[in-house]
Length: 621
Image 1 (spheres, rainbow, N blue to C red):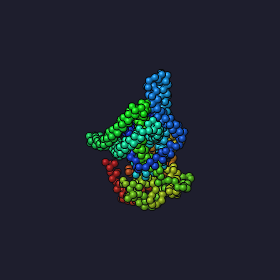
Image 2 (cartoon, helix red, strand yellow):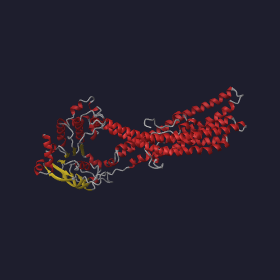
Image 3 (tube, one colour):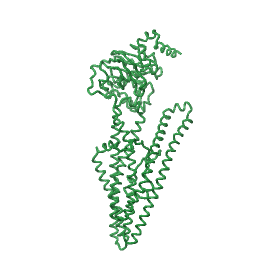
Image 4 (cartoon, rainbow, N blue to C red):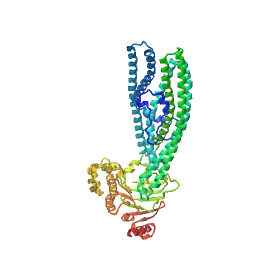
């Protein structure tokens, strides 16, 4: 399946008159593997069709084109009947023959134009619905707290936003149109067959269920295998992403051969699943061809006897066979449509989960306003917190800390002590299970999270940059900043020189993740961004830990300027960078075990003194 073109209905592009033999030989079209539906219900599609109903004009035009093309499709067998009976019976004059064929050409022209209009409008609706759903889902995802992404993989969410929406686009833009068209064709075709030859029609209607039954039987089995195939293909994608993202490690350790063997194992698993699906489709095709062509032969046999007996005309039997093929093809397509709708319902339910997810961190009904002007005071009182993904382990335990406005507090301790958790709670990405956190005296749970974060500027351990130009990355914390303000911030962050040296200056695209800049340059851009934010509280998360000595010195100079006049919390593994802090808080296992100045803690001989001794000895070596 991998690499095949996306599913489509042949008549969507080539007209509404499918060839009966081709319809039988091809069987149900084989779509790309899609996410498995989570139920046998079509109820999740209400969300999809509700979105589509926002465009009634396009729906009305699509339905008009649909009715016209279905009527034109059924008019063609009738014109063949007239042509055969009147033009091939002998004695017909050329004008009469030309008149008959001109009518047929007119019907074909109407069919072609109607098909083009229907294809345009149903495809437009499908694309528009997918765009609207993606916009709604993304808007909701941006509201959700980081805890949601601990238990829901961003890669899996990305898959829903791409593959699942592609399934929905196929349902809205193709499947529904095919279902309506084939329903009209089947109903109109059966009526026309009754008009042509009631006795032959009765035999045909008895035989049709014999054809549909194996399609339904095999179709269910094929869908089950297709769901497994989707999982296997997902394994291929996940493996490729993992290995390519770690290519330097793979090649550094010479593991290319082993990774190739692992990939071969994953691919072979995908092939085995695809082989089972192919065998089922081959069996279904064999049974359907035998039944359908056997039925056609029997109908033609009876029809030939009726023509010989003078009961019906040659044109009638020709129109009957052609219309019967249309009806059989339409009913066969309808059996597949249900499977497509189920897959669409599964995709819709997965997207609805994202759309209906509610943020755990939300503004209260009547948020308390933070005092103006902002002072930057922080207070932690008896805070206990467990991450949603690790409820059995407390990241902070009975944590109490008062930080005065303008104070610089460094937070140190071994890995896993709870340092980064403090930052997560200050920005209210999570709420503690116990205790209270306040900014300027206001409990965070009573304030709007947006107001809280507006008073905070963050410089992360790695300068996170977006795939955009330098200007947009710099003004991310203050989108309305002027170029003059941007350059002032860049100058204060020791970033002006290299930014002016870029080929297009601030208009230079920095690449995905800022790959056009070095690590130190990325970090200085992040500092400039925090400067532009001009917030009273500054969070520095090991902002110099990954830099070389020269870059660290430049970044530290920029940080010194950024910290002036602001309440600053600093997380640092490199203790040399926090000697000048007003206070150092030492964490271990989620609790404060020491606090004081660098000199006081060094003399105390506790955990800080031990960490400092080990680190400074390592630096000296």
